[in-house]
Length: 301
Image: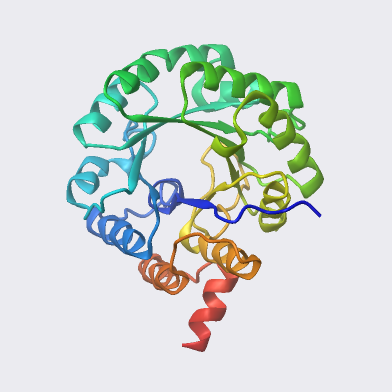
């Protein structure tokens, strides 16, 4: 058995990736409270905002307000999604610690999602990458559909490695390998991650798994065996993808933390505080949390 990392970083994506698809408006005050609760739980990286067109993602229209009002903790990275230079300028004004650019390993998904080829999408980010370097802001690249695509099906390993290389060449500090539609299984996960590791530093690659088929925790464990030590998750299992029909939420943070705790892996995050944050946002959204561990822990209280 391969040895597992002693410590992992969990990137909490609930306030952005988790909430962006909600049809009913989530007020800025609720988002601010959620970010503050997550900060209090001990996260070192929280995806808090997206500076995108409110026409396409109306839920993120309050991002500047959220970033201005959150209680920031020293040493915590507050990230914002930035699809272009206009988004970058807004993120800069909002004092984002990290900007996130995104591409797809699937040509078909790239066309459907951002109406251009993979190569064109990466070229669009050159200005953002350059500006991030000039301003000393961390740059993260996210690669969607790395394990499968709703339009083309299988995604070749070489296609994933190619986009990892392109993101690396832009100067990304971290690169996310994302299972946007949640179709990966452990063996597939290891095959993709092994190819990604050949193109980028293992300690700066992250796994972003959706739980559509209930495989996310198994895929995280499979990635741990390869030495991947950064994972994305969403409090209460919030989220989905507006361009991937049927894709359910990100893996629930509470479930990931419970597993890490059982494995003796340090996250620096207080699980009970995250459970409380999950209850808070679930009650506001008027639905039960998608986290099994969170619901089990809450039931004992």
